[in-house]
Amino acid sequence: MSVVVMTDSTAYIPADIRAQFNIEMLPLNVLIDDVSYEEEIDLTAEAFYPLVRKAKDLPKTSQPSIGYITDRLEKLAKDYDAVISIHLSSGISGTYQALVAASNMVEGITVYPFDSEISCMAQGFYVLEAAEMAQAGSDATTIMQRLQEIKQTMRGYFVVDDLTHLHRGGRLNGAQALLGSVLQVKPVLHFVDKIIVPFEKIRTQKKAVKRIVSLFDEDAKTGKAIRASVIHANRPQEAEAIKQELESTYKNVEITTSYFGAVIGTHLGEGAIGLVWYIK
Image (tube, rainbow, N blue to C red; front, side, top):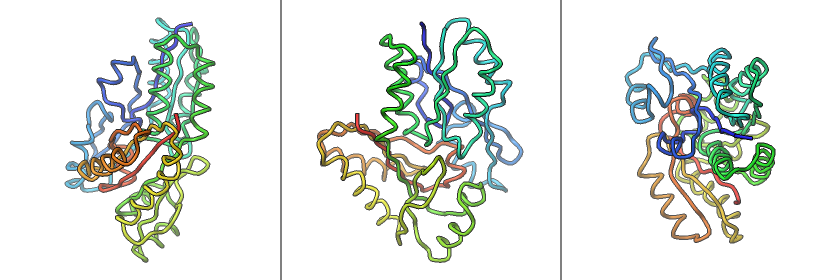
């Protein structure tokens, strides 16, 4: 059975890596001052943040339409028997549900939907492992089993500079956002049951980042092989400094830097920093 791996743009896997591993990508959409962009196609993360600073209103985001996904699946059906489709958490976007609906309308290809229950490079880690396995000849069932294994140790924590973006976008409830704003705290956030919730309230972003690193240390100091990524919203130097610190401390960690692109950046705001990892 020939297997192809598909994801959406919020995995933030660079185009050259997608080409190398034959990864299909469904773009989500960003609307800025009445101009619509396909994320990672029309709009890069580098272009997004300066654009938002000049925008009159907060950008809006939307998932790919069922019709668009159906068209993509029909094209894949010409060359593949199965597609493993890995998407951002169904608790913060309807993309996964749209994929499931589209899969019921297409014949000639078996669709294996996977809800990452997270986003960004954590989602990307699932995609990369699946694509590597597909290239090596693994069947869809084996790959899906591996994705469930990864989910057992996947971790992700992040801190935002301003909670109002998450609140206005409906990704954090008003009481939590108001409390954070009034007290000037920088809560460490994570995903629980597919939605974003506070993990711990901390007074400054610097201390919040240190707390995230300490959570990572708990897994890293076991000596097990770990794959990790520092994710940033237009803070490349800070992300690189954290990466270098972790690399110099732990030889068992394979670590990269990644970014919060336009869709996720709309909801987190510029200045967000996160760390995601799993035990290989």
